Picture 1: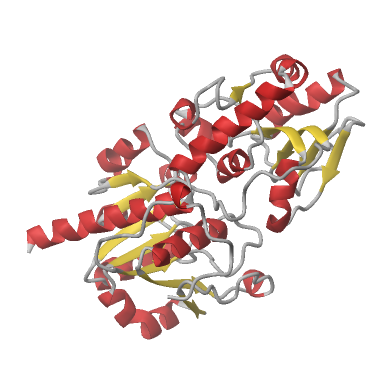
Picture 2 (picture 1 turned 60 degrees about the horizontal axis):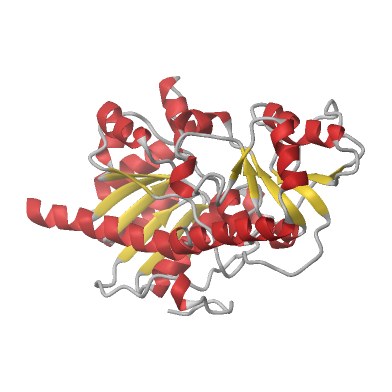
Length: 381
């Protein structure tokens, strides 16, 4: 299997290649060829590349839609076979045998016509099937109000497994309420080849990156904008699109409307501290780390975060991550944490994510789930 041209990972930070038999894995996801306007592609690229490194054969299928066709930044990933389809009928006619013969077929959240795709996959595949939810709290909220854009309650028990970006109690709920035979976490991850510390003079005291959302704006106001107003000498930055004109930005807050993924590492490494703010659905669910959280930690940048249940399962509070509930707490960290401790805090978080949350770790976990499902099928036969 051809590998990409990036620098090889430190062996200590990546699980060793799999001793297990090579699996044929087929993934139907939102996109792997375009990272434009979605966070799914980054997740799939790291996961699929590491599955290939572990010796597995991966096919990735995605709907050919205009908004991704015009922004393909990885049209032909070198670590998998990629197939585009223009309709459900074309998917069925061109890829029926691939779905039928794969050891594992994974259908991701937000796949167009996802319910129809899932019903066809679970009826056609002879191997194991799984739903991979990169948006679990949002998905369950949709199901509760009868929105079946890409998943329906009747479809959940038809998949052999429900793999979730969120962990904790929500997994039991997926099994108990929706009848999944096996709900397991498959958290987001980061790519150590793309996210690492760089030596550069910090440009900002605190930065935040995220698209505008109504539910994230109040904590952004409280934790960053109010802190900026109270500390005019401080340097702040907010990167992300769709902020309304009604937002009143303090004079010491720089705005970046669009930040391409290729510039994310530089952005993190240009901050003394970075701010993490979690969507309301994710806060309510708990145990829902964001990819930005892991990417920032991988750069060794100390993180100030809002609090949600389960955060302490990913980072040691006060030792690997700082929690803020107010502008006062934010300012105390910015002004009172010494440079030596600031760097040590970031390094401890970096060691944690390298040990637990790389794309290679997720590939190993997915492999384990696949073998568990295939083992169950063998027993049933």
